[in-house]
Amino acid sequence: MSAVDAPRLPEASVRSGRPGRARFFRSELRFFRSELKLVFGRRRNQAGMAALAAVPVIIAIAVRVTEGPTETGQDPGFFSAISGNGFFVALAALGAELGLFLPIAVAAISGDSVAGEANLGTLRYLLTVPVGRTRLLAVKYGAVVVFSATVTLLVAAVGLAAGLLLFGGGPVTLLSGAQVSLAEGLLRLLGVCAYLTVGLCALGAVGLFVSTLTEQPMGATIATTMLSVTSFVLDSIPQLDWLHPYLLTHYWSAFVELLRDPVALDALRPGLLSALAYGVVFLTAAWARFGGRDVSN
Image (cartoon, rainbow, N blue to C red; front, side, top):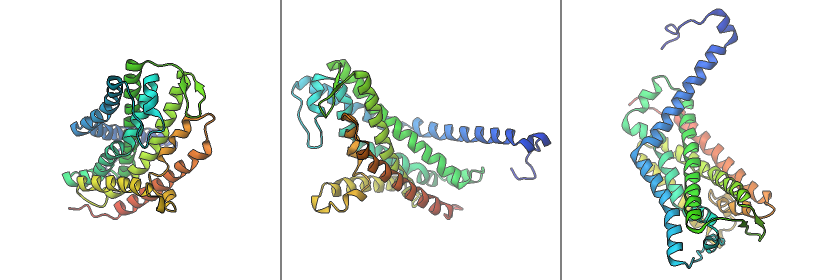
């Protein structure tokens, strides 16, 4: 609709600006809901979420059947504590999926965000509705943020439910040796989910940028996943310790600090700042790239 065709508002409404703002927010909300429906309504995304939810169930059943929990190289004691308290299934599942499965899920959504529209030929249509490029990127990234939080909470919730069902609950023994109530343990678990979500959102910003560089969503997904895997690999090489603080995934494992008493907030701050830096840099790069991209074809 051109400026000439736009309906004229009453003079008082124009002066106050309230109807215009209300209409704008309603329009933004509809657009965002539509994007969320697209993300969560796709069969492949639902299948991916089901696979993520299956991991904590498998962990709980495996420990229950063997009745002999085993330690893993990256596990700070979560697997060994499962048989004593099902609460730890959620933490063990998050730790197990953080290295690959959760990053793949976020990479798939962020990599498909712009490249998928371009591949289907709907990107040009979206921009002529009209939907501004900045608005489109904001909505796409907002959906990535919601998806990152959803899958993290999904893994934790399914793990908690499976663990409590098979092993029961009770007071939670923290990594520092202190014991807290199950209610406080649940609050700490929410904090863990929030911290991991921030890190995954930084990866989502990288994926969104990569998605603006290509029209092949699978290529963007693979590139984003490989960046995450490469970051984990480099972080495991002691000779590259000078590089570790700059890696995207270096501080993700710091979520264990939320399971100590008292919580070492200073240990969490670098991870939050790193995620913020990655988010700002790559969202800015995505905006700059997408703003000058030719989508006329």
